[in-house]
Image 1 (cartoon, helix red, strand yellow):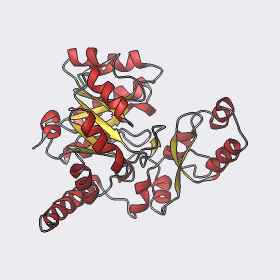
Image 2 (cartoon, rainbow, N blue to C red; image 1 turned 90 degrees about the horizontal axis):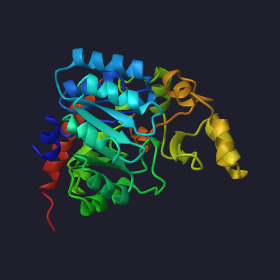
Image 3 (cartoon, rainbow, N blue to C red; image 1 turned 45 degrees about the vertical axis):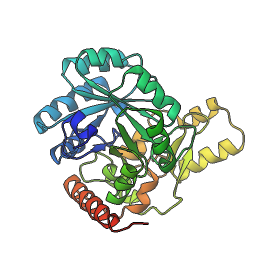
Image 4 (cartoon, rainbow, N blue to C red; image 1 turned 180 degrees about the vertical axis):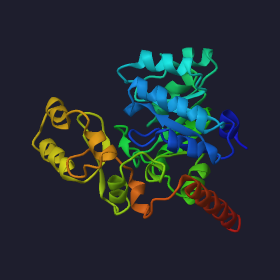
Amino acid sequence: MNRITKLFGIRYPMISGGMVWCSGWRLASAVSNHGGLGLLGAGSMHPETLEEHIRKMHRATDKPWGINVPLLYPEMDRIIEIILREKVKIVFTSAGSPKKWTPLLQRNKIKVVHVVSSTAFARKCEEAGCDAVVAEGFEAGGHNGREETTTLTLIPQVRRAVSLPLIAAGGIASGRGMLAAMALGAEGVQIGTRFALSEESSAHERFKQKCITLDEGDTILSLKELSPTRLIRNEFYRQVEQAENAGASAEEIAQLLGRGRAKRGIFEGELDEGELEIGQAASMIRTVEPVGQIMAQMIAEYNAAADGLTEIRF
């Protein structure tokens, strides 16, 4: 056991990312039931939908689980009310300052973890009293930090900067990747892309099948005038690229993005005009598998790689 497994009461220090349009109760409960920590992704749920998924989680697993909540969510008061009423025990926050809600959540015996992309924000997590921190490199899918720091570079710097239990994220889709993150100072890993492409993910099957055909370079950080987001190169991305190259303002990019484009792409399977968010690790994945199989493979690979390294001495 380590600080992460003890903090959450889980067997393996493996957390599923709370991904929009992917992380519903089926995925989250599967990760928890197989010894990790499953997270619901509140960022793509209306309050009523989140409440429904929470209640299904209570029925689907008796293991620890949590919710990822983007702090810029427009109905945060209602989301917090639901979390308190439904007795959620673990909350991961992102996309904002953890200072506002962390004290209230902790007064209600909820463990709070915040997702950051830099050492500066990691320090703010420690100042805010968070129970742990996720440091996410820009290999990750979806919204990223403006620093564009890779996981390999970010983790040791955050480890040096704060004493909090540290979870690594961004580009981790294998047992070897998990071992590398641990060697850099992480005590757990948050896995997004690999679980987004699992059988239990609520992403559309067309989206999953598209992602498992990707090669290196088929995703790119885009929408930098708004919030840097890793996307698949499709027709929508090309429209954004053309607009950005022409000097479009943030307002013009926002108009091009419109509303509901990520839902169209990830959840409804519109591969040309949808916003297709996925991480660089997609190029490592060639099959859609059940969560239990994914986790077993990663754990076996982690242990085999760790055993192999004991034979190397300089």
